[in-house]
Image 1 (cartoon, rainbow, N blue to C red):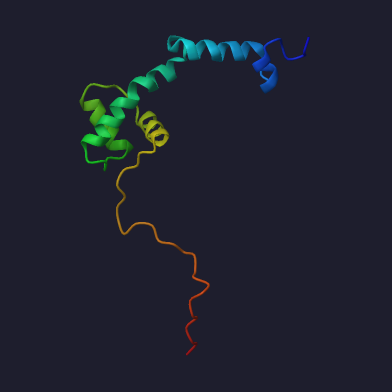
Image 2 (cartoon, rainbow, N blue to C red; image 1 turned 120 degrees about the vertical axis):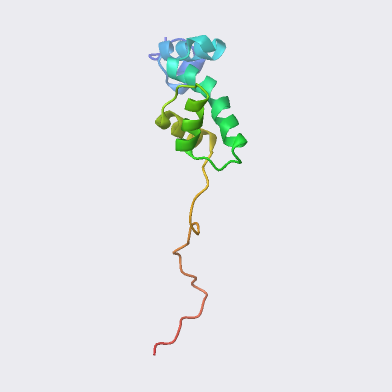
Length: 112
């Protein structure tokens, strides 16, 4: 008998059998997921809806405030984490990003 348990998948990935079984059970039944994961699953559509409804320019602070106005109790840090996971980003201010990488092929100016 292998040292890491009897499950073939657990042996192949070197997971403890109890961790593998817990993961498999959570995949089958989402009610077994941790409370934070369940809350995130419920909040993701709300965050996406508010972000899309406001022309995709709201950042985490404004999305969080809008959710609070609608009666959804959520912390700003949770909204920021979910927006990062979804790849959402508010509109930036100013002139935008500026590269500091010099062009090696450009001619150097003459010294005066």
